[in-house]
Image (cartoon, rainbow, N blue to C red; front, side, top):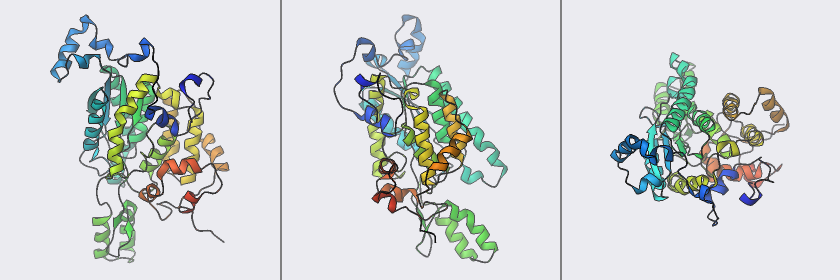
Length: 385
């Protein structure tokens, strides 16, 4: 937990996932000096000087008025594109975020970046472009944030490499930032009434050629594995990274476990404006949140949930963006002392929506330090003799 602002000098910098969340959501009145009241410290570079008249003329052309020139500008970066269920709904979510930011008295400025679907490109040479998309996402958000002089960033990622991409950019730019995860997909359902997901579709071909299922059953799986928008439903890379990033403290509570097409996800988007405004007021930056202890917390949660090994690659890169050196040995040290508890796909039975139903990542994080908890029991794997 983050200590109150008047104790920050004495408080440890190590934070759990509630760090950003509690500070950004606080409604306690505070006193600010003249510098703290100036939320537009960065954008004032182009909105205030008479010498930047051309900058101001172009901003007026986008619809800004005189009052807007004195407000903080928030870059809302979305990894939206039509061709992937993980990302296809992000334009709509970014619209809700824009509404929330404007309601908070800030200027929302939406922009987009690219993405590659691992689920679509898997098994083809298209996967050669997957990891490099992480770097393009990071570079493009960093470019726009610095080139346009935005005071803060809210990023909406969806698919696997999106999450580390936006976090790397946040670390490099180091201005008040919040990630809003696009959310998990709901499970599909086959003709037998069984829950299925994207891995069911991957496995269907092997089952078909081995004679385990026929063509009708194979096509039924393919047709119904992905019922709508949202990232792959098990503890695959997208949900692993979203959970790790919530544990790091860079999202609001529950962001990693709220399904993409849920009232909770919409409420999250509609509440993020006040959250980013509070971060601006207190000048809380990613380097204040992304500490070595925060990364250790994330590694613990990844191990407990049985997350993707891609977390090793991505957390090391995110840590590097804020000047922290993580190695594979750090992950091994955490793994050696951390139990595996969650019976989540692909190795287990449940999906991310099931975790949400029992309280999501906040409930899990609050209980993960205890050896036993009623919350964790629902996801425990069967006892082996």
